[in-house]
Image 1: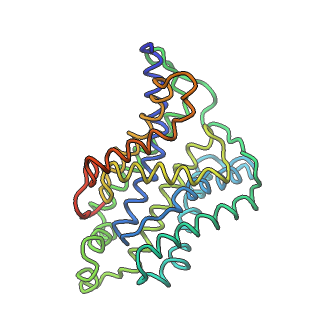
Image 2: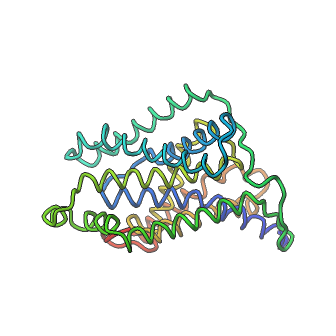
Length: 296
C-alpha cells in the first residue's frame, strides 16, 4: 500500500469515525444518566439526515438554519421518547428498558420509511464538490464540515458538563441520583435532558454525514451497533473514551478495506465487532473504562 493510499484511508476513517464518536458519546450520556443502553441512537442519526434533507433540499431553507432546526427536531424526538416510552417504566429492570429502546428504534425506522420512502436521498454537499490534496490524499470539503462540527460538538459537551449548572446537575444525577434528589435536583428532568442531548448529537452526525453517504431510512441499526462498539471499546460511561473508541472504529474499518486480501473488503463491518470481542476478552472495562462512570 502506497503512502498516499494509506493517508486516504486514514482521512476517510477519521471522517466516518467522527460519526461513530458522536453516536458513542450519545450512548455514554444516556448510560450515565439511566444505566440503560439506548439502541435508538442510530435512528436519531438517520432522522437528522432525513429532516435536514426535507428542510435544505425540499423547502430550500438556508444551510445553517436547516442544520440547527434539524438538530432541534431530533432533540425533541429524543425528549418525546424519554417522556412516552422510558419514564412510565423507569423503575422496570434495565433489560426491559433496553428492549423498549429497540422497539422504539423499529418504530422510528418504520415511520421514516413511511414519510420519506424506501429510496436513498441525495443531499448536496455544504461547500461544493471540490477537494484539497494533502500528501496525495483527497480531502473533500464536506469532510472538513464533519470533522469541524464533530470537534465543536465534543468541545461544547465538555464545556456544558464542566461549566454550567445544568451540566453539573446531570453529572450529579449520574454519580448519585438519591443525593442529587435530596439536593433539590429534578432527576427526571435531568434524564429527559440527557435523552435530548444525546439525540441532538446523533442528529448532528446525520446532518453532516448525509451529503457523503446519502440519507436513507434503514441505516440506523448498523450505526447504532458501531457507536455501541466505540462506547464499549473506549469504556462505557467514559465520554473521552467514547470519542476515541468511535474514531478508532472508523479508522480500523477503512484500513481494513485497504489491508484485507482481494475479495474480503466487503467484510469491513466485521472488523469493529472482532475488535470489540478482543477488548471484552482482554480488557472488559474498555480502554478508558472504570467499574462505573463518574460523569460524561
